[in-house]
Image 1 (cartoon, one colour):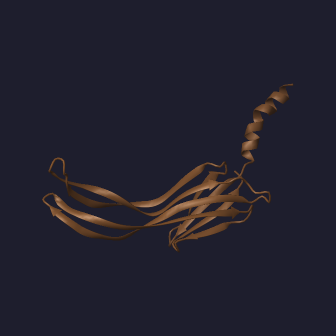
Image 2 (cartoon, rainbow, N blue to C red):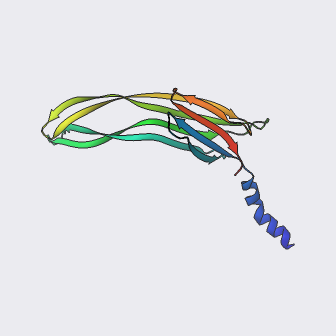
Image 3 (cartoon, one colour):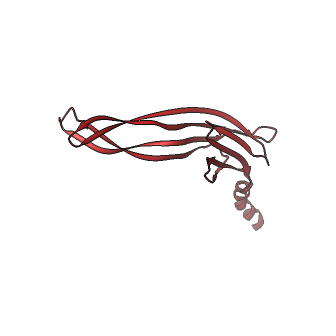
Amino acid sequence: MRWIGFMLCLAPLLVQASSEDLKVSVASGVNEPVAYKYPTDGSKYDLDLRVSHRYQAAFKDTATKQEVCREAEYKTGLLLKLRALPKEADGSQPVEVIGQVSALDGISEGDRLKCGTNQVVNMSNKAFSDTVRVEPNRTKAVVIDGKYTVMLSLQLP
């Protein structure tokens, strides 16, 4: 009788331990690939690989008629949202991949105020969306914007 209670307590752990994880590796340029691991539970997971950059913002506040100068930031790089969909009958795992690639097109000089010069940041954003089918024991590669390679595979924890 004790064994039944003990096994019932362990059952959730055994079921959880046998579930697969989604292994995500991202390579860009000559940088080493960066690896992440997410459960395939249907939740959405954000993967933000953007880099922050600073610039000078200077403007005149219309309400107070004062000049305001401060640093601001913009981000360039890859932003992903991953979600594992229900598993297919053949054992493959569909994964929804949504994201965008942000790039700096240029920074130009704007208005010159007493406290500083305003810099105007010109950015471009390319959005993408795809559903990728990842098969067990096989790696699926997705190339994004010709700059990023995202490799998806299923892995037992």
